[in-house]
Image (cartoon, rainbow over all chains, first blue to last red; front, side, top):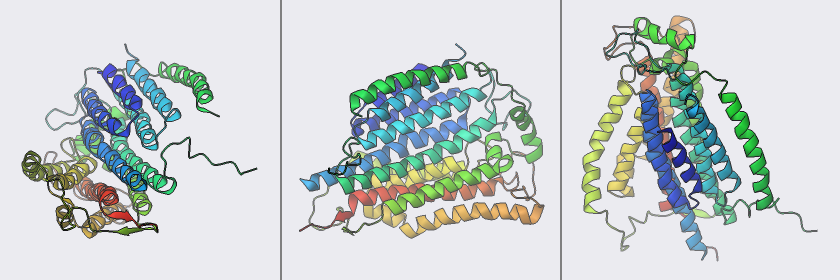
Length: 75
Length: 116
Length: 253
């Protein structure tokens, strides 16, 4: 389980394109939530899963959408 | 393997820092910062873990069963939610930077030297 | 310094940091053998003393409520920061959302997404409210439930379009929820000061454990924080959405 977390974390950093990184971050959030569950911490697992798998990738995607819109306008 | 969680937490700090140092995109940088923050959650929870213990919820077990430390869980719990809010703030900052300067590359965003 | 030099400096510094961290960490107690007295004491005391079976929420909202006040205000400050950063700048104007401009072909939400989303919105909101209310008994509480509720609002955007989401959660309501939650939390604290002598003292009657109305001010604190977190996250999500949908840069001639 811990190795999975380390591998996921490394993949999040190595994904340079923000779009791919958002998806990797969602997976990482889910895996981390699962690890917190294994650590007998249900409260923390609950908030980490909701936040890391839903809220964070969403905000990355929305920021990316705005940036892409700007770039298209400049052309 | 009793120090493995701590080593993984240290590894996450390092990997996140590597991402920040070699980042070419501000959005990527903010996510690497979030990874570094998650290493602190891992560290806090691993410190409080008690072997073969129950979670600290006593809804159906008597309050004397051995349980994992609740204080670090309380710290981590608020930390997760608030950390995401701060990450959102950083993302908003990145968006505005792009609007102003047209680029998300930290290399190109460095202060320009005055023309000699 | 250029990128290659920076990478070399990082290689040296990173290795030193890793070594220092690992050296520090092996000095910690072994994984699984934590024996801090404070934690074990709270585990034993929480049920008889505060009639609340979820010790983590009790720690957050009763034993260490002052720290939660600080966290709550970090959240508030970050939301205010996002609001001020993403305000309509000089050179931008607020246009009608793409979904609403007549004659523009917007990709229709697919049928599967629409049906799944509609079916999921009500259970999500219900689960969110349940998690907030039962914070002092089962895993949950204001922070978790608040994020779940904000996700419910997001589901309406994914299922329908932006205008529907605006109708379901108007901006004024979301901002009011955020402010009310933060203020409510401070009022509970001041109530402790007025009625029981010290800041954040638990001043409502403590019933038996296992009941919904028990544990004094903890459910109220959960409610206040739930409101504040829902308002905060929904507000941030809608600000980011506005950036992509309705804030347009003025044409530069």
